[in-house]
Length: 399
Image 1 (cartoon, one colour):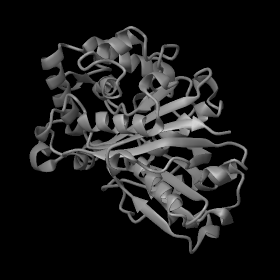
Image 2 (cartoon, rainbow, N blue to C red):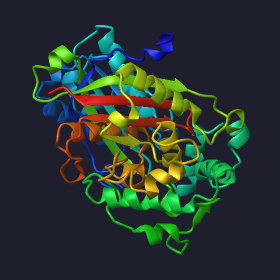
Image 3 (spheres, rainbow, N blue to C red):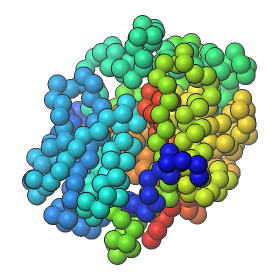
């Protein structure tokens, strides 16, 4: 490997317990504090440890105006007073906020500062009007150039789709196939916001129930506004070997790219490509070794370009992967067997942690109807902004 940037985090950090709320419009959870309370103790109990064993807490929370209560790092103490006086830190990196929290926790372990960390990803998005949600999300774009794009962040990805279509041809069939696949997969996800198989024809056809949102993107091409939380317990490999279950990070890589979409070839997701390349190098594997992948499908065009970024198909041929069944549940490389953000929902701060929970469930054989038979190696891609903050993890079952 050439240079420090390709080393990523040291291999060996393990996920040994997890918890996950349903995603959606959770009327019975008025704020982030309530959502944190639903997953914090549950993750600790799932790991088979005591709250007193937790050495540090890392909270992924975007907020950005979704709620007036900010500064969430110590909110977990309301439900877990046993953690009083432990260090607790909030991290934020747009839609990759959850993965940023995971990386912070792994840094803590790698530094030898403790044995167990609790990582929580959380967001309450539905308490403000839709137009305000759109403006908050535009904070993940480069406002100086992109702040007035119609339709908010959907408009940003519509520009990406338009540019991709101009270069590689109309991909509307492929986008509809991605939406249909993920909604079909989401039926089996007990945490998903939308557990309904919409079918290809519905996703492909513009209608009153599936209107155009921006450019070529219809409602079925856009992820959902959601509330939710997910949590994991991380520890080192030696400690994990003594516990009931463990999913090990073989690689955990972060790559950041230029923020303005005008400063790069946005149809290529170059930061994501580099993150995948580095992760494969660290893990000593390639795309053909993966059993499945959970990738960031905030919009269907993002998943399409993800296929190319991860090396599954050559540049410009992303459509092939979905249209020939490669990424289907029973295909050569199932992508988003959970239903992805498209079906599951996308509570910003929770998403990255959720993706790792669902991958860990697959590797532990605990994914129920979502289970990919024989899953042994997972790829997870979580991004912030339009492929600006790019996180790739390679996960395997340790025990």
